[in-house]
Amino acid sequence: MHSNHLLLEEPIRMASILEPSKASFSAMTKIVGTLGPRSRSVEVISACLKAGMSVARFDFSWGDAEYHQETLENLKAAIKSTKKLCAVMLDTVGPELQVVNKSEKAITLKADDKVILTPNQGQEATSEVLPINFSGLSKAVKQGDTIFIGQYLFTGSETTSVWLEVDEVKSEDVVCVIKNSATLAGSLFTLHASQIHIDLPTLSNEDKQAIMTWGVQNKIDFISLSYTRHAEDVREAREFLSKLGDLSQTQIFAKIENVEGLTHFDEILQEADGIILSRGNLGIDLPPEKVFLFQKSAVYKCNMAGKPAVVTRVVDSMTDNLRPTRAEATDVANAVLDGCDAILLGAETLRGLYPIETISTIGKICAEAEKVSNQDQYFKKTVKYVGEPMSHLESIASSAVRAAIKVKATVIICFTSSGRAARLIAKYRPTMPVLSVVIPRLKTNQLKWSFTGAFEARQSLIVRGLFPLLADPRHPAESTNATNESVLKVALDHGKASGVIKSHDRVVVCQKVGDASVVKIIELED
Image (cartoon, rainbow, N blue to C red; front, top):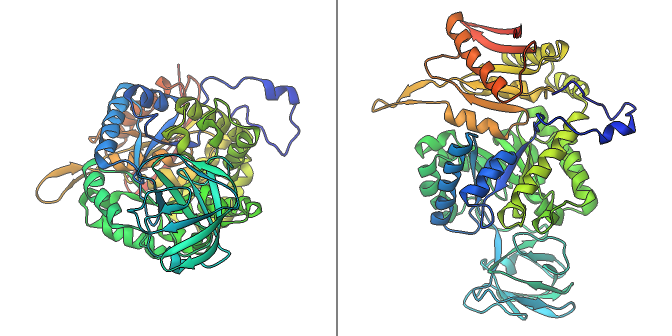
C-alpha cells in the first residue's frame, strides 16, 4: 500500500500520474456521510458503506426523531448485510437561526429591494417579510451588518442564496437591503449574521431532548456540537452526557463555525475529542482569503494534539452533478495533504442526486493525495512537537511506526482495550493501515455484567488510517503468549481476507505482555 509512495517535493515522471491506482488501495482518510431523503434506503446506505462511508451523520436541524430512527434502522440492516462497521454521529441544531417558510412556496427576492426579518412566526414568508426563529436579532445587529440566508447553508450561488445588509432596526424587526437577486425554495433556510454574537445556548433544550431520547436509545458514538464558541460549551455538553449512562463514552466533536469559535480554538481543542471545521459558515464569517489559513492552522493543531480533524463543504457541486469541479477536487486533495482525518459530506449525500458516486469520488481523491503526502517530514515534525522525555505509550507508538516504515511492513496491528494506543500510533501517520484489535473488557454496575469495546471500535472509524476489529472477549489485551498468538491469527486472517496482507509480507505488532509493552516484527509464511 505504501510501496509506490511518491513525494511532491521530488521530481515525478509525468506519465506515472496516468497510471491506474491499485484496485486494493482504499483511502486512509475517512468519510462521514449525512443520511437523508436521498440516502436513507437500505440499498443506498449499503452502497455508501461499500463506497467508503465509515460514519453516518444524522442532522437534527430538520426531520424528527421518528424519521431519523427509521433511517438508523435501515443503516443497521445495511451494516449487517455488508459486514462493514459504521459509527453514528448526532449533529445538534445549536443556536442556529432559521427563516421559517410554512407554506413552502418559493420566495423571490430582488436586488436593491427591502425585506423585513421579523420574530413573528405567525406571519407568512413573502418577498417583503421573512419570519425567523429568534427574537433577539434586533438587539444583536446594527446598520451596515451583513446577514446571509440560504437553504441548509449559504452557498454563494446567486440563485439559491442571498446576502442582506441591515438598513435599520424597528423594535423587534430588522429591515434589510437585498444585495443580490435570488429565489429561496423549501421550508427552512439557515440565517447567518456575520461576526455577530447570538445570545442562545450552544446546547438547546431541543438538542438535550433529542440526545436524552434518540441518542440514549441508540448509544450514539459522536455528538457534533454545532456552533461551539467556548471550551465551556464542551464542558457543559460532557457534564450533560455523563449523566446519561452509556453516553458518558460518547465523544464530543466541537464544530467551529464562526469567529468566536476561532478565537477560542486552542481552549476548545483541549476539551473536545475532535474538531469539525464547518467551512460553510466559516467562509461567511471570515474573509475568503483567510479561510485556507485557518484550515491549515487548525488541522495542524489537531494533528499535534492527536485529535481528529474533520473538514466540511468540499464538493457542493456534486449535489446536482456527477463530477466535482477542478477546484473542488484539488480542495479535497489539499485537505488530505494538510492532514485532515475525515471529509464530511452534508447536502451532497443528504439531498444530492449522487450520494454513492460522491463518496466514491472523495475516496479516490483522498487515496491519490495520501500517496504523495510526506510521511517522513510529518513523523519528524510530530516527534519534535511531542518532545522529550516522551510518555511510555507515546514512545511505544512512535517506535512501532518507525519500525514499520524501516522494514516496509504492510500493516501495523495493535491490541488495545481503550483504543488509546491505536490512536497514538495513527497520530504518527504511518503509510500503512493500522489494524486496531479492540479487546472487550468485562464490567459491572453491580446489577448486570456488560462488555466494553464496541464504542472504542466504532470511534476509531473517524481516525485517519485506523481500521478497527472487535476481538473475542475471551482474549484479554494483555495476557499470556498463547492467547495473544490466537487473537493475532484472527487479525491476520482478517487482513488477508480484506486483501491488505499477503504471503511473505512483514507485519508490525504492538501489544502488552504482562506489564511490558512490546513491538515485534513478524514475516508471514505461505
